[in-house]
Image 1 (spheres, rainbow, N blue to C red):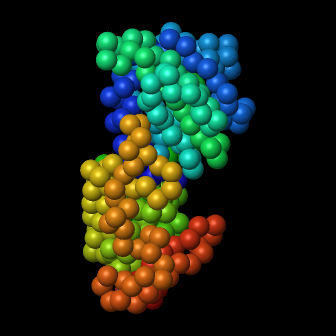
Image 2 (cartoon, rainbow, N blue to C red; image 1 turned 180 degrees about the vertical axis):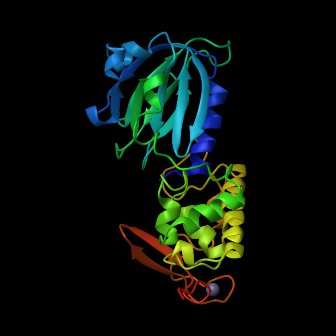
Length: 283
Ligand SMILES: [Zn+2]
């Protein structure tokens, strides 16, 4: 699933092609579960978007927020395999192109491009809400702080507030927003912390170290256009390159770069944690 650096890369790609432009028309071939329209916007999703101009594109956690000129926002979550692609309108529509956004003309060089939302697993969501309703929606209203904006001292306080297993806590979007399996595994590996260590049993010094690794890894991955381990790629179709620098995630059975013990993969809840059983002791 795309996490903060991948979603940030998509947001930046969308700004390049979408900012200031108007949706001339929108056509959907999406299952009902993929699309949601606030009742107050009346009409169909397609009709509510047609003619609207994009005024800003921002990220909050793993959410993409496309602000429109009528005080409404197109709120997108990519979930597992959702992708935006900016392609020439002559490219045949693909089976999993669920929504096609036809844009106004920008210039002679790319007047015939359109933006497509493709999602073969179909867990992605596109929702259209008036701004005053938007921030009351679960999934946005209950988000924790942004990790790149959170001071170290506040992170320590958050972790010490109550006893939580550190990896599930890092991945809980209401605890801190934007981190998933990849960056949780990597930051715990770099900090030599076992994924099940209780958050309030970790020293302040160690939590400051963890906070530093979280920020460093997220920023470094943004600089590399994210991590591509499955289908993720940017709006321009290019994959990220941070997967070449992973030290724990996806490396089960390979030697730890610090001590050569083999990295293990263990189920924690419904997800797998990757860690070095020697460098990352539970006690
Ligand atoms: Zn090790």
